[in-house]
Length: 151
Image (cartoon, rainbow, N blue to C red; front, side, top):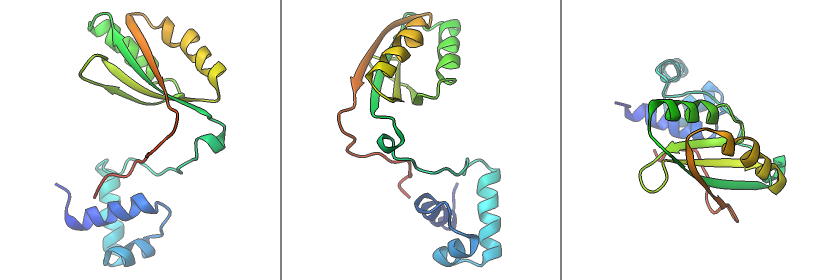
């Protein structure tokens, strides 16, 4: 169970991961040493998995984004394990979710353009054994994106 002080720390770090320990302690109303210990405990326990920069996708040259709906022929461990192993190695795949419903998996993919997306499908996705279908939804406009949890 995460305590109230931890949620305040996490909420602030999600807004500003570059805050100094002093700034963070001031923001959440703690001493710097207590704040440092709590952040360290959150890191050690895996609640805080790391720190990263939020990069503007299109400005970084990734003009195309798509949501892929993937269904497997069978759910044998062999096919599932191979699919997961291959998908997790691809940098274009930002997220992969095992889901209920018509598709077994939903992937969020980013690439430079339509030609790159076609290569991704032809040279990668369509070569994974055991896939029944891949359906694509090209993202026309991002309405809301985020990674911060709602503390």
